[in-house]
Image 1 (cartoon, rainbow, N blue to C red):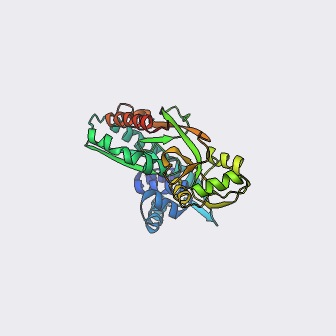
Image 2 (image 1 turned 180 degrees about the vertical axis):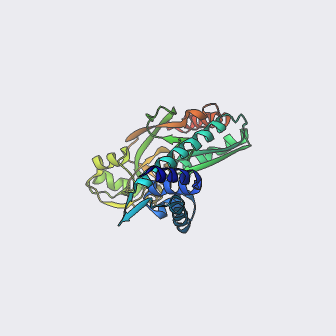
Image 3 (image 1 turned 60 degrees about the vertical axis):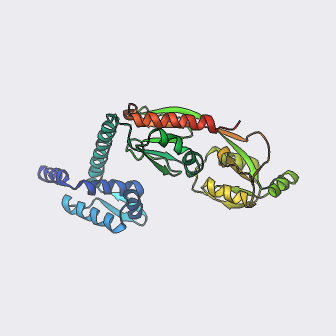
Length: 299
């Protein structure tokens, strides 16, 4: 690449639309147009149009497609690095501005699993909102780990203490998991443990302690139903589909415990970026979460 071409590319990059750069980074991260569209909350056509506009502004292709694989060009590698740096700087500025907000009002986004958000946290929200009525709480419920650095959420509930030095973790408590089922299924399990039907996780969940426990203790049992969602597993267990390993906050009157003692316990941590540590509404939510776990843990 000669000096003239390099200078031209630099000037074009400076003039490139930020939405185009952000879309390009999302496309590479997700690996597809549809994945980028979901990440950004736009249409497939919008992603395609933004990438075409970006390539036109930079006077060259950013990537090539070979089947399902995407290969970056040299220009694409340069642009991706710049886009990610701009994302990091934008997120850092947003965190600093949020951290300087001393009002006990506004939005705070909490990332958790669907089961914890729906069945454990949501019923306890009135205590928080009655005390701080100007708060706007948003739940982001997914099994995928969100990026706190990019402010996909302000606070996340995780089941392991993070090693990232930019993140602060506060231990909330322990979650106990019990093997349970309908009365008929529990009786069936007690009579013939090796042949009782079970409810398990689908392939979308990584190797977590729950799936490992099921593999170790019921690996040979028939699996009648699978789902990533613990709420769905709970409803299936209540309907008598099979035995399930469920957290204590999903135990319902229709479910009978196979044993009184929990089969598994996991620690829960509240995790947030250190730039937000002085944010008053974050501290208020942390105190509320600690109260939830103190009052909602099994006896």
